[in-house]
Length: 358
Ligand code: ADP
Ligand code: MG
Image (cartoon, rainbow, N blue to C red; front, side, top):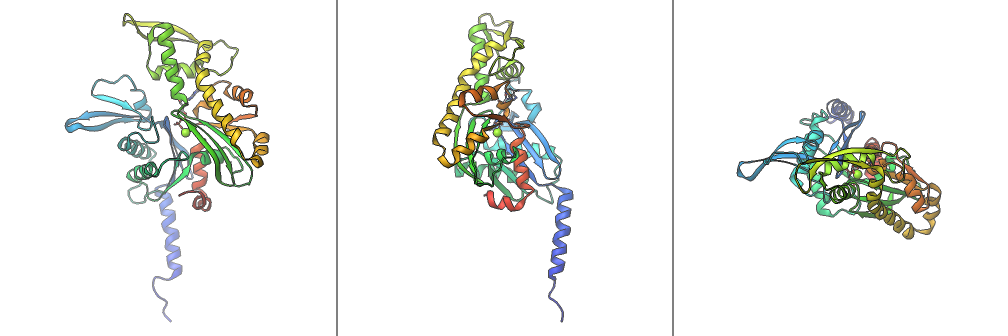
């Protein structure tokens, strides 16, 4: 008897050929679309992009905007553009403050990774913070689709962080995560692939930078931009004394005369400035510990806190947190990429993806 065409075997074979073609031409992607940095992981390749979530646009006729740079190049322009060009952080204030530019950011960064998505649209996993609204989820999804994604899956950022940090997320045992990002910090307790508790505050690296700008203006009478403030934080910032008495020379505009003025900024003064945002982060973690279900509390006490996000790179922040939350604290290896790496692990394991994504 003639079998109906196409036979099942052929279909399967065709499917196999198609999927290997697909892999040759475009790998699937996991994206951590952060307020400060966007990190992209490509299946089979690892992290292929880690650039600031910054877009520089030029206003053109008709009130339209034209993208002139994204990522590292655009960040270099923050605060030093001519009138017609502005460097913006489209995710700065909330999840997506500027929908259109977030789409542009994604499209340009994905294109930079060498994706040939024209024929084979990649499957994309994107991390979103816990508790984002349906509208925001749709905005993220649509940005990814506009950037060339085929199928889009959203997973919780803290789940990505937990998997990337190697925590036992599928076990019925509690893990406590603290992410210190640019625009926000988030604490989450995870057990059995689910988020048991989570809380976010709008305090992170940006607030630290703002506090440095204010301090330098008040005590040194010098105006500096946030970009310089961030450089100061990274160069000499610490949560506890480093023992090296770090210092950095900074040039800005004199508040009174307006002329360029230079001052030496020490780690000690910056530590003082960073105390306020750090205390708010400590308060958030303590709040989580008070609300933790008793059965999970013992796991958390034993395992301690896993810290991710760029803020985890602040000198001695782990020891500072350990003292003030009274738990062991571990900084994830590669805290800026860990969410994308975890999401990439999910991407490479479709079964768990169907379980966890939506
Ligand atoms: P997001 O997920 O919001 O994009 P990230 O996890 O990428 O944020 O972290 C970015 C933040 O980490 C920025 O505010 C940046 O200034 C800060 N950061 C990066 N490196 C350091 C460092 N060495 N010390 C202190 N803060 C740092
Ligand atoms: Mg983040």
